[in-house]
Length: 285
Image 1 (cartoon, rainbow, N blue to C red):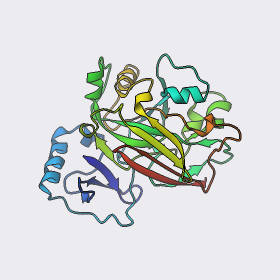
Image 2: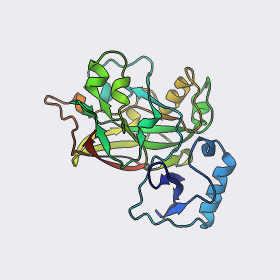
Image 3: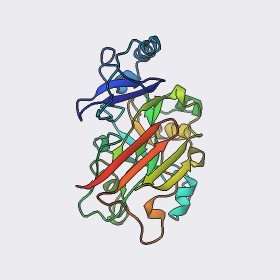
Image 4: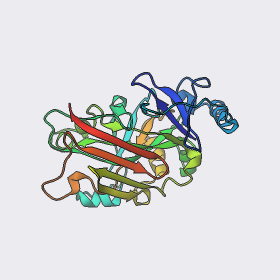
């Protein structure tokens, strides 16, 4: 299934995109697409049954904003330097263990919402990423199979980053990762049954129509299953939590001088096979 949330910021309603590309209203069945729903197998079965029966009301998509596909996100866990190509382009050693950092859930916005370039920013960068959406509470998972059984689905994420704040201002990466609007998510949460192999997905990103990133999840250093298993050793993952799994080569930081960092007026578009497409215009904060 392709689950999504549509409507004004803070007042999104749950919806489903059916196999014909028709937007369907889920409001009569569920309150929201959130961790509570994702952990409730019977509720998900009711949605599948209603979708299969063709009884869900049609929503007019004209002019309708698409919000983040998951509401009330608890935390966004991120994996850094998780593609061989990206590590090589920035001159970093291959990590022996996953590099883990956190983004605040309030950085998450819709896939086509405005992205704000922070004040005094000179190095705002792009990163297309595969996002994992957790569907079951995960603690101390022991195998890849167990890890994948805790995944509700996947989505497109844009891990926007300010490199000066991240790398040159001391401390951890948090300052360069947690600026307002720095995590567009969606358009859909695609349930795990529709993604049989998360290591078989192509990721692409364009800036002002120019292809910048053209990667594949087979280049990940740590697989989706290993990332979920590993993170569960250090923190409890709850339904509705998000894990951004790293970006392939092609970011601005890895390009020759003068590096083409983002500025107000730029347009970024990104997509992952089967998971949909995003488009953001950048404006000054």
